[in-house]
Length: 65
Image 1 (cartoon, helix red, strand yellow):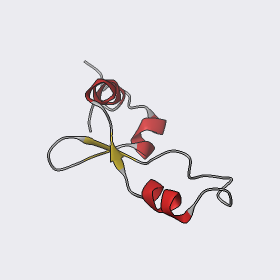
Image 2 (tube, rainbow, N blue to C red):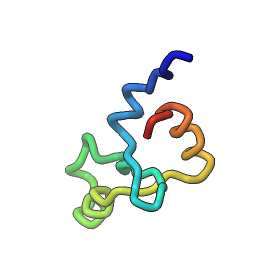
Image 3 (tube, rainbow, N blue to C red):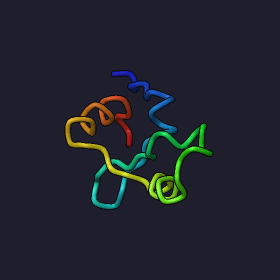
Image 4 (cartoon, rainbow, N blue to C red):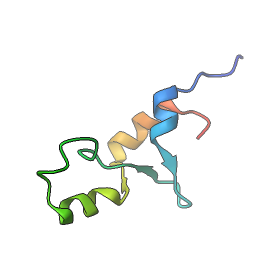
């Protein structure tokens, strides 16, 4: 059986925590930052976790994660 291919975009965006959950970056931090408050931008810097439903999709995209 040949090796499965990983989704290159997903490889760059998601990583695994020690407990096996999938870590992701938060959205809305790329542009138009002048109108966003400092508090909001600070909260967006903190990474988040994917939901269980999304985690199964990500695991299918990155089989060797």
